[in-house]
Image 1 (cartoon, rainbow, N blue to C red):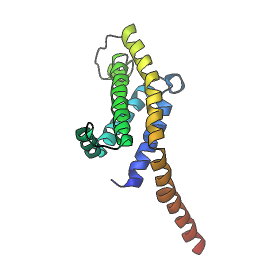
Image 2: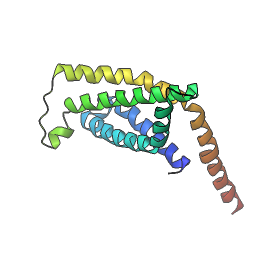
Image 3: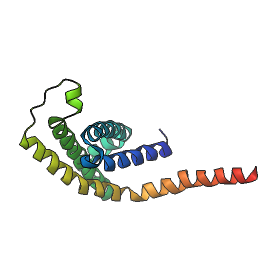
Image 4: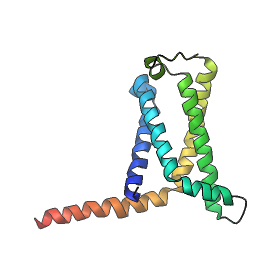
Length: 158
């Protein structure tokens, strides 16, 4: 997968996640289905970076750039946090699992865990975005903006 496609996937996941964070805005069914879509896209994101993850994980306690070590720790925390949000989200599901006929023992513990894990997830996501901000800006400028300007130039020539 190319850098531009990966960037667009990541941007779409971020937008979908931001929309999904407010179930009162979207309604519970949209919140749940959108969250499942985000989870699937995150699995793709992790799979695309799996070689890097394994390489850094193997070298974590040996000679390794500090920023790579920090990225690894933040990425692992982000993955664990998102897994907690999704697991607890399934345990409080009122739409998706009901549609599939799966009984879920809704309880206040799962609801509290879902709320707390979702709130703790946000600062870790912010840190992840901050660590990758330069990459995102570079890709946006080189791959997206340059393509837009070349389309405009082509249109002007016709």
